[in-house]
Length: 127
Length: 413
Image 1: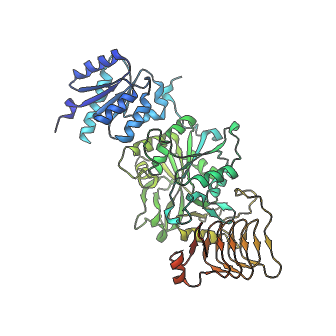
Image 2: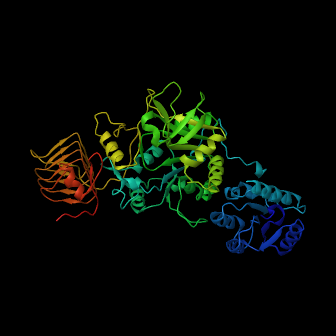
Image 3: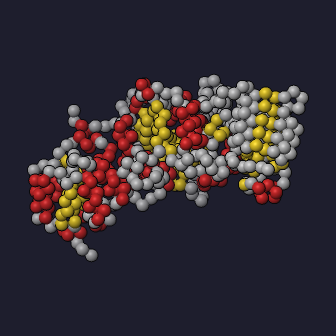
């Protein structure tokens, strides 16, 4: 059995290229394998091909937003944990966001996101 | 404003206004055990007590309890239900925020139909998001009862409950078909088991159990979190089997006892089978029916076709202990039966213990006993049913207790 804690495959869904690259760099240095999607449609397609261990989902994106993509993905793969990662607090009031395992507001300091990822993956492994 | 502190829970001291409340009626059941009455229609659309459909009782309860924001979650064969709602229930004013709206599966995210009662709510979280009610009332579209939901809602607020389950004190020996609750002295639910073989009794009442009626009040937040959690489980996505037992673990779930003013158990019937359907209809032929259809303070609303009053022929036309709807013409004998609108009963006929639906014609000399005749059937002259069960079984579905069902579309030569 592979060690999910370190070799886990994460899908980062983020429309801004610079942020995508930054997250990839930061999370690869944590030992995760990173897949990238630039909007909801790409995310849904990617998950169909190869379901990741965890998804980090932006909300405001062109073509298909993160809430819609998360709904579609969880309908097929209800056990994949999703962390909503957005610049906005306001989506917390949206019931559709409650479908996620965690809600992290974007910050230049990525420690909260990293801690959540590790917490959720550990929990998943022990489940 | 700190949006993260957003709370939809009502100020507990305040009476809820209509906009604080949203009602979801679960009307998606397939009704297989009511077949062939559900051959072309969903269970809530099955005719009942002559001029009603089963859904009219729940919708009338809503209307009389001032619940006027209603989504009906429909699924199978909903066309006849949709038409009934349009014809009989287009009475709300959307400009005042009132509506009765059927919602079939939209497949917004899901590629599936409603898969259980909890999934029906889960798939419609976006409606709750749009409306943002403080409380959600969840009802079923296939129950026959008269209930004022306002005391239930008041009870929910007084208890500061997360959810409240309406409960019936029911004979224990008949309770194993239902969800059974146990409560503490404050009516907080301490256990919930669905359809137990040996239902637990109420404290000090060894012959009675506390039965889940399928009538709930939820704080919206509790409901949304519960159905989301359930959606991630490998469960049957059913309120009774999955959601309620899980919620009870977390506390704050209360049972409201549905009783008459004198403290005795009120009438409530889940129309699940042909037997329970027939029996419930017959209940309304008693001199003291389960509840009063004539009560001017609690009208049961329905769609009524524009037909003249019932007419009984002189001498040969005789009617005893029956409900006869408008538009009927009776030349024969009708005993202990229920006739929907526009039934024609020919000469020298005898109809006993039967339910006859709209636009049925019964030919001269026919004898019907313990029969359910669905809409628009033409019963030929001299036809007999209900006297020889073996012969009947070769032609029709006959229930264990001997009720013959003649479905829509049956032709006789």
